[in-house]
Image (cartoon, rainbow, N blue to C red):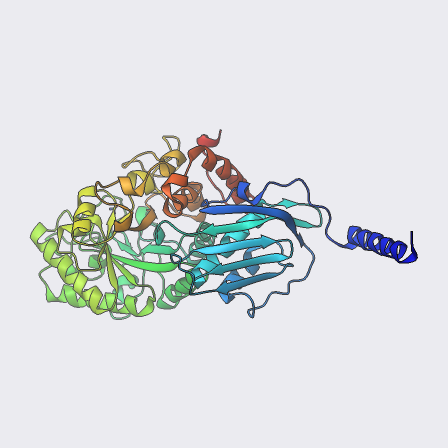
Length: 500
Ligand code: ACM
């Protein structure tokens, strides 16, 4: 062997030994990217050779110069290690639906590209799951290489929290937002008012919270959000990819407002605080100018604080409002909301009025109203109670929850198609899917965890992944991994019998 050759051989051996000591350890036997238990299931996953080693102790070199600021903050808060190269790019020329992304894992780093900032954040949320489920060794985490190309089936993937029946404080609300962000939920609907309590400060009508904020189901002390707190929630949710949709339910479900201001009462019975769970006994006076002045003030104050496009006007279960009065009322309120530059959302009964152009009809019980909405050119938000209501019990042994719509085990939450709920209402007519959590029996974060998990991951996949790609046995495989992950984060997910 000539001297140069020996020299080269020694050099290569030296490099090899150096790699063995200081470089990445050899990757363990590892599942490919396409087998990772991701929820919601991405549209496309292509595997590539090799792995990216992430040293748990390597310092992060990330900065806002190469990573979108919101994704950077999200990942810093949620990843176990950030010592690897990451770049994100927003390329508006990518012709993909809002929220779509491409995630590329190579031996030398990770990149996320998207047409918008929501897409970058969705890619970051997928990266969080990829890291959570990747193989690890004592020194670090190995990510299998490959590319994920992903886009949502529906633009609106929502969760609703009823903070009226039982008030949920700021810490509980923020913890809930943290939990659901991991499943690419992008709308947080807050049911802010109901018969039992009023939860949002309105400066021009202060007794709403001074009186209406004090009560809740069972007679325990209620509570309310100040306007500063409401703004804080909006920012907190936005940092995790969620737009807040405020709801003021009317003309029924208004007892708490009427206790505070009896002049709004449309019944001849004097209102008194309501601690029970019955519905359908209250109504605003739909004939009075004062009522519309009140609504204008409430909508104005809330709309001014709310950057998102939607204002939810409720409209459900107005059993003591004369139908003609109901129709006139909903027509008028839709116009008030539009004057404050918001798009209306209403529970499906609002389709019995004259729908304004942009009004979104949220199906919960009446498929015929969803069809009417479609025929009128309005979009439908799918929340069929027997599939999506997270306050329904899993089965008769569930420690909390109701069952008037159904018992909903995880298979029932997963095995349905939003385009098969109301005949004639198809994907193009559907804005999205929302999972509501009503709080008659829900008092704490522990209660929220028990009812929301693991059904929310199932419903998040219903809203995100194309119907033809969803498969129950494969979902169960992935869900088993998520149950462990959720528990490892201290989330009290329900031990569902579908995995036993
Ligand atoms: C509803 O469950 N009353 C919308």
